[in-house]
Length: 489
Length: 139
Image (cartoon, rainbow over all chains, first blue to last red; front, side, top):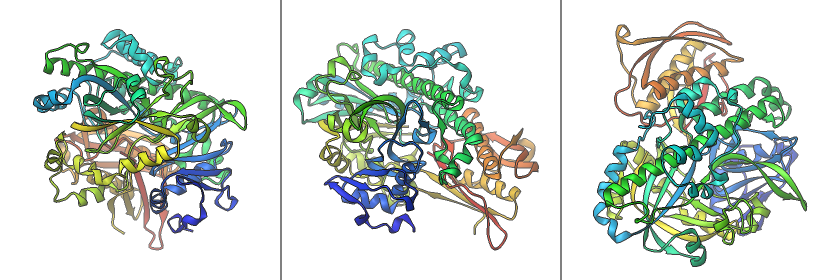
């Protein structure tokens, strides 16, 4: 049966925004599946076949509880985008396809005390400077040149290496997921091509849907949490979206190749056809090597976002002729949305160590969790959900319900609903830049085609995704930001 | 079926390729990738191009195809070099020996193609004995 012909009635609706597909041997499922969605979003997931990907993940050996998908679900490869799955840390499996090629692609939010009114006369100058000074696009390398030794230290120390040698405050590190550094000590697991590609890219944005956005905090939903996070209505914030660049892509490619060598028979044994779901046992030599390489790429991405942040801050300081301190520029949070991490969760009443894979999904830990920065522990972990180009972004906070339902996971964005070619056709007569200017948004980009691919109509409505996210209880709204300047990678 | 054409999934892009044999299939894969990247086929006289020899061992033709396309992307991303053409000295189901004809990139690629995936990749033989495959790229 073509999955696109699936009837929505096959799902049990557990609540307005929770849909369950029971374990079904005829679909090769070893566990059930649960999709967090409105009816419209679920139907779209059937129509674009991403439901099949959620089902495929449920057929993986040792999957704990069920295969999950967040409200921004759409078709990817291997896992769907928005796909989440956990496996036992001791004797479970790890999958590069449950992370993605852009390892630790993620977002970073910076707050300021600059009132939005004050930025009007500087918007053009800021956009031009960011586009000029921050390397964007596929082939662009960083302006920060590193020796191999320095680069290996970045892989080991992540954001901390940037604080020690380039800029930023040590206090910033606590506001990065995992402190901006995961354990990486086995340098032999990284191939020479990955090092070659990554060495000159720390401090570069990349292309595709990566961006730097200057925003206005335009609505506060939770005044107490907003104050805790340093967000004030009417002030400027800066959102940055990028990942591990060529380094992460090469690491992912290298390990998919390595895992394929022994793993194809295992896939066949479990009736899994998609080679992007190739896996290794966590405790195997290949599994441990991939996990180390994953940590190195994660550290690269945190260092990358930290260095980009220092570069953007310098641009602000230059344009406003004032220090970052006087401008009130502070890290709010930095989080990954393509990653696999060891975490402790409750499984049938017992605390268990799991390897949680999040592909196009973000962590959303609740108040009181020890991994939430101390200053935020009363509120819960900030959850950053950017909208599509030209639409609002949201800050939410993690909840106990997320820990119970989704391994502490939430959505990561609006989620595409239109392919790139359809978006370009849709926007063929559209003056994208001018349309956004009418909405008071300035866009800076080297690629006109890239702008058309990223039009808001190509994405689900962010408000719909947020409604589901909050309605399902897996995160709660804190603030909304609207874009003023978008620099697209 | 066309020798090569491009398509999109919701989040990614891909090529559909066909050919009477592996050599032709791989040549069409290069063309399809170039159309994805540049919306046109690069034209570089053979005598002015930079020759880059390389060899691959694989466990299957699909494995070779993915790594062949990955090699092309590597030269683009790392060195800013476009692969205009390829000459095969040998191409079997598990071995490839070829020369890429490269030229400097001018302008910006249309897509930030990160990697080649194995998603749904299978080289099949149709009733007309044509080989065909779909390759999806991560964008």
